[in-house]
Amino acid sequence: MFAYPAVSSIRTDKSGASTYLIAYLQAIFPTASATSRYRLMVMNNDGTNQHLLFPAEGQPGIAPLTQTLAWAPHMLDNGGDYIGVIYEGNLWIVDAASGQSQQVTGDGLTTNIDWK
Image 1 (cartoon, rainbow, N blue to C red):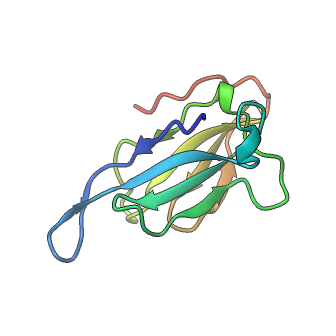
Image 2 (image 1 turned 135 degrees about the horizontal axis):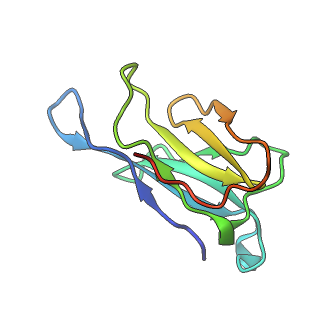
């Protein structure tokens, strides 16, 4: 119900084809998606390699109504794609390749993400 898909920057694979990643929210309880918490998922542009990014298994899910998924405007020098997510009122940055996450704010007052 609240997927909020977001597309990463475009890159070129080994064959020269353009590819990108798609991040989206997936309901933890799909039959109750209107009230369910959600998980941040990511997949390749062709729908393959779908996997959980955030939060870790066993952690409370993401509140979808306060959510905006935002990719970094371009890949970093190390080749990483990062996505920002608001979790429990704080900004978190998640590495799409490794799934490692870093909490950026701690006051619980973050409501919007805008990469520059």
